[in-house]
Structures are given as structure tokens and as C-alpha cells.
Amino acid sequence: MQAIDTYYFLGIGGIGMSALARYFVAKGFRVMGYDRTPSPLTQSLEAEGIVVQYDDCLDNVQELDVATTVVVRTPAVPQDMVLYVWLREQGFTILKRAEVLGLITRQQQALCVAGTHGKTTTSTILAHILHSSHIGTNAFLGGIANNYDTNLLLDAKSNYVVVEADEFDRSFHHLTPYISIITSMDPDHLDIYGTEEAYSESFAHYASLVQEALVVKKNIASRLSPLDSLPYRLFTYAVDEQADFFADNIRVEEGHIYFDFHTPDTQYPISNIHLGVPVWVNIENSVAAMAVAWLVGATEEELRQGVSSFAGVFRRFNIHLNTPQITYIDDYAHHPQELAATIESVRRLYPDRYVIGVFQPHLFSRTRDFADDFAEVLSQLDEVALLPIYPAREQPIEGVNSEWLMDKMSVKRALVLPAILPKYLRERVKNCLAANRQVVVITMGAGDIDRQVNEITHKLTYKIL
Image 1: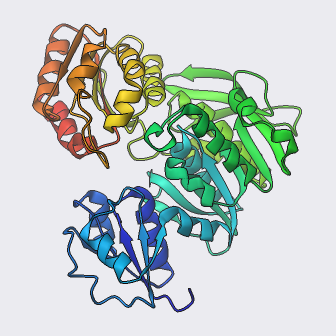
Image 2 (image 1 turned 90 degrees about the vertical axis):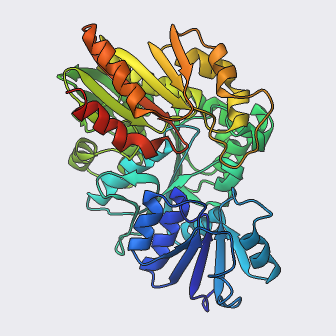
């Protein structure tokens, strides 16, 4: 691949694809790509000099040289799209995103984070701790780090690279993890795996690829057996229970969360760790990230400072408005367990408030497979507004829609909206305030629900307060 001078990305607007695109630009390659619709991320790529097309046509690719161009595609690219068919027929080298990322992980010591939930936040906390320490790191992140306003970190002096290990389409099997975290193994992507057993087996195979150490959440370690036969060190982590790495003495003081961090190598904990983003599940995420940072040599003070100064990840419990009367939070949660973690954090932080949730289900198959779980979790809210299911790569499934999901819920007030309606939220919040209720509004989902965040924030701020 030494003669390669151009990379063309099919699906360049994806969070993982855009990080790779930025990486190759930084390495001096010409980078181009296609995405279905413009987005803030594609607009950022264009501002950085990357040519992005939004029409499925051949205008920008016919000039490409087969011998010097590599095409990188996301698994979500339809097999029959005009661009993909033409590039394939012309004989271009076409690699999956995970294959390219796998090549990079074999050139550096990869610190990978896998799991159904928590991998984006955990990998970003780890990257931030190391980037701000004497160790340094490169990083390919699954979200935009608020500390850096990017999903790519580069450090020519460091041989470490932090990578989010995505289980979709078994992508993480292409990686070569030096050290890995596994945060969770709740079944997901059953449209790909078929059964829960196949999903777990995929994680077990991924664990077999680890070279130096595996840090795994304590309550799932047994599901990866036989771990004792694999040639690496195994560590467990937990919150409020004994493990190799664990947090205890957790307390909330004036909206801030503090805890003590225990390692297997010290008699006394690192006390009074301040959680920069006060979300309950981030205690667990931080423990996992600190464990790996500790294993590669971060000091106690670097751990403390890294966790405290972490500013979060875009769309991971982002608080856009926070007043004594109204709090507005946007979150990427799209699996029942993720929704449960988000709602639990809201209830812990704002125990006396009335909570309105807006949820956009993601994928017809996921909605079908976990409908009862979605209904149970969403019913923990005081009221719910559902949006139509975001299809992403899928065709509709007969009988599976948001009305069907709503009928399974037991929440007192629920409805289906044709789209996010900031005006609707404004009126609901006004009614709550008139009844002397303090309110939390949460928008949740992995589709395009985030496109309305700014308008919702504006309506709740300037039309009410």
C-alpha cells in the first residue's frame, strides 16, 4: 500500500469513518468521500479540506486511479448503491473500516474498549487521561470529545492508540488489542448475530485476541471463560464491591460526585476522585479507564486530574440547560440498558423533578427484539413522547412501529409525535412550571434526534425563562 495516495470513504459522515478520514489527512493523503446527507460532522470535514459528495453518482470518482486509491466503506453501505457497485466493478481495493483500523492497531500498542454500552465514554475518558499525562496517546474515538472537539487525537511521540472496539458486524475481530476493556455484553445487533449465544461467542473470540491484559467488568467475567487458558493478565473492575480495580465511598455533594479508587497494587485507595461529568454510570466507566491508564504507567495525580477535567462526550448525557426550574439533557442512549442508565442518573441527580422523555427508537429490528424491555424502562419516566423509528440501514418490519411500542408502556402520559416538536416540549414544560413542578427534559436516541437539540434549548430558554 506504499503507492497509495488517495482514500475514498463510503459513509464518511459516520463517527468512526470520519476519525479515519481525519487520520489520513493528517498523514498527508488526499481524502474524499460520500455520505447520504449533510451533517455538522460532514460540514466540519469539508471545512478541513475534505471533498464530500451527497449524491449517489459517479461525478467525483471517475478520476480516481485504481492503482493508487483505497476505498473504505462502512458495513451500512447498501450493496446496490451506484457508487459502491461502480467502484467494485472497476477493481478498486475496498476495505471495511474495521480492517483499516485493524492495520493501525498492529502498528501501535492498541488500548481497545469493547462492550454493548459505555465504550465511547470509557475510551474517551481513557484517551483524555493519557493525553493529558506524561504518557500521551493517539485515539480513534466513537464520539466527539468535548475536551478537544474532535474524535481523533494524534501524538507522534506515543506508541499507544486508544480504539473503540465495535462489535457490530463482528468488526472488533479485525483488531489486535494490546490491552482491552470489556464493559458489558448485553445482547444487541441480533439482526447480525441471530442469537444471544452467538453474540457472547463473538466477545469470547475478541477476548482471545488480547495480547497483554484484559480488564473486564466483574459480573460478566464468567461469560468469557475459559479466560484462565489465555496468555494475558486478567483484571476485574466494579463499583461498590471488591474487584481488582474498584470504586467505593461514593458520595454526592452539591451536584458533584466523588469516590475512592482502589488498585491491586496499593494498600490505600486514591481518595476523593472528583467525577468531571456527574453521571452515575461514569463512575463505572472511569474505574475501567483508570485501570488501563494505571497499567500503562499513569500516576495517581494524573488519574485524579484526568477524571476531574474530563468534559464528556457529545451526546453522552450533555446538559444543555440547567436552571432551578428546568434541566434539558440530550443523550445517545438507544438500547434498553443504556436508557436505564440514563434515567437512573437523572433520578439520582434530580430526585424531586418531573421527568419528560423524548425517545427516537433506532432500527426496526432492535425495537422488535427488545420491545418489552424498552417499554419497561421508558415507563419509569413521568411522561414519554416517542418519535417514529429511525430506520438507518433497515427496511420497515410490518407491525413494528412507535404506536405498537407505546401500547406496551404503562407510563401515565405517552404519545407518538410525527417529529420532534420543540413547541410541544415548550408547552409541556410551561404547564409543569405552572403546576409548581421542576422539570427535566431528556431527548434520547441514536438517529437524527440530535438535529433539534439547539432549537429545543432555544425554545426552553427564551420562550419560558
